[in-house]
Every structure is written in C-alpha cells, then in structure tokens.
Length: 281
Image 1 (cartoon, rainbow, N blue to C red):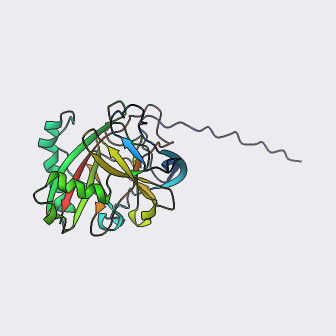
Image 2: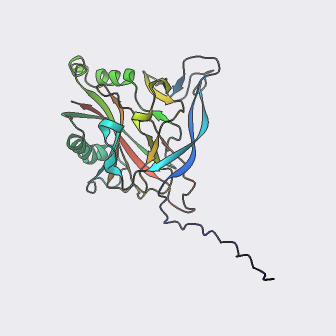
Image 3: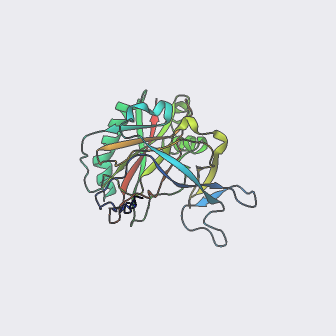
C-alpha cells in the first residue's frame, strides 16, 4: 500500500504597498433606505437647526459585483452609458491646494476637454469643484448617489445664468462631473459608477439638500439590478466623465466610492478632484 503525503498549504502572500487592484471585485454598497415615518428625505449640508437630525433617511447594505473597464474603455460612451473616459496630457496645475490657482490653471483644461469630447457641446460653464482627501475636510463619499436631479439642474441654470436661463433651457442641457485622482495610480477607495441603461427611474429618490441660504436636490438610489463598473488604477492624466443630468437623453449615472478589499496595507489613500460643469448644446 502506497502512502501519499498531503501537499503543504499554500502560503498567501499579502500584496506590497505598490499593488494596484484590478479586475472584477465583489463588495457591498450603501443604498437608500426611506425614513421610517414616510416623510420627505432631507440632508443638512452644514449643522442642522436645533432639534433636527443631520438627515432623516438611512442606508442599507447590498452586495454588488463591480466590473473593471480598464482595456475596454472604448465600449462605453457618455451619450449611451452616461460615463466616458479621456486620457490627456499632464495638467498645468500641480498642487491642487489653492482654489484660485485651480480655477486659473485647471478649469480651462476641463472646459477644453469637454468641448472636444462631449458630442454636441457648444458652451461650458464650470460652476464648482470639490477636492477629496482621506484626511481632509471632504472625504470620499461611500454611499450611492447622483449629484443632480431635473429639479436641481434646472435651478442651476437659473442660478448661474439668470438672464439666459429660459432660452438655454429650450435646448439640450447636461451636467457632467469631470473626475480625476491627484495622487494616482488609485489603490484605495476607487470610484464606482453604474451604467445608466441599467438604472430604473423609480429607484432614484430626490433628497432635499438644505444649505443655509437655499435648498437644492440630489438623488439617492434604491438597489435593483444596475450594472456597476470602475476604472482600475486611474492615473493623474486620466479623466472620468460622469453625467448627472441630460435633458435630451435622460442620462444619469449613480456613483459611489467603495472600499476595495484588495487594497494593499500601507498603500496610499486616494486623493481626487471633481469639477462640475453645465454643458449646453
């Protein structure tokens, strides 16, 4: 009788701090959960009035599969899927620590890219930007959302271009976020985005976004069968276009940062900037 010796267990080697997670990944996202009392959902952007909660709705976790578009970028475009990709030259802005410098150096680059790469775009108005750093004032947002709704997009046009709003709103209006890392390649908390063609309107819930001087609206998202993607290891010269509103084709892309379980110990935390644009034409 011949004895066989079991093979020793394979040792799993932890990735080193330079590892870039790529390929399909399974994780969990935070989706919308309605207020228990059935009231209209709201969120205070700053401190709420005395006796009011910061927000009156919650989130609930659902497992999702996220597909890597790296190497398949040409399969997607902003008119169909409400997201798109651009690879460009290094930016003239390097530090991204001063708002005035960002507007002087980086905004013109963003405007030029949108005019070149968004079909039909004739005029661009960049109306704000947000820098996110893990240790900064604004950190990556880890629940599924859309920055704009029809109501808030229309209000944006009236707010920024009051004398022209009525005429501009007769034609195509889009709101597109231009997202990029500042310390790529991205290793941790990458950005996931859903294919607009797999998103159902009934799952988009308007959230009152209450500022001290006005009330805007964003959309939270209920989970269904949306298909999720990310662009692995994004570099500083890569730009992700996220369409939040399109008056003509109805494109809107839910998105969220997510915790990638494959991110290496000791790797860098993601830093990023998103610039928001009104696109006319």
